[in-house]
Amino acid sequence: MTTSSMPPGPVATSADRLRQVTLVVVGAAAMAVAAWGAGAFGGQEIQNAASGALAADATVLAPGTGAFRVWSVIYLALIVTVILQALPSRAALPLHRTLGWWVLASLVLNAAWISAAQLGLLGLTVPIIGALVAVLARCLVLLRARPAAPRLDSLIVGTTVGLYLGWVCVATVANVTAVLAFSSWDLSFLPEGVWVTVVLAVAAAVCGVTALAAGQRAVAIGVTLTSTWGLVWIAIGRLTAGPDSTITVVVALAAAAVVLLLGALGAVRAPRPATAPSPRA
Image (cartoon, rainbow, N blue to C red; front, top):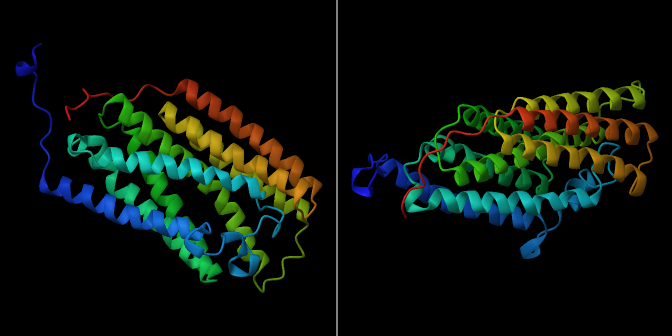
């Protein structure tokens, strides 16, 4: 088929252009807030915010310090995703029309979480991270519908959502534990071994089933990598930074193994995403 006889693709509208501009401008601002929250531009690091409630040694379910290097990978993936969605040739693609605003919402919520933590509003971080999980879960549902896009776009967006969602699921466990530990509630009546096992088992089930049911290989691999990474670093944290907890080490590593297994099955089972011809620049 010659170029002149190819069927025309979707035409970009003013709503598409508005989405692109908003994603770039607001996304850049959210990234700047994230950098500030990581200690850049003179800001204090998250581990020192909120009276140290989010530090690597604050609770038995806090990931070790090295775990947070994963944010460099996630932010890089988000930057590539935003740039891809901002390309004029991508404005009208169904994939970006479907997910653009949701990706932007995730960036805004991440910036809101960092701001709440830096301001010492520890209790507010829980509903914010809960909303972030919900937004990323919505992205996963939309991706399962496999909106048509060039393979490169599906790979980049799927990987980004998977990496982001997998890590945030584990981070939610650490976040909620930190809030409870620094609250006025007396939870000493619950044996540590019991609640740690239950919480990590639930986390493994959620992350593993999410990867298994992702419906797209890139998403399944992304969820598996970052959630396994987070669970392993919870174990490493107990072996290095403290507080010491043998049961946490054992259960966290077992949970990571379960997620890795289910994620591998999900990646193998996932069909290829629907593809569309690459748009001309």
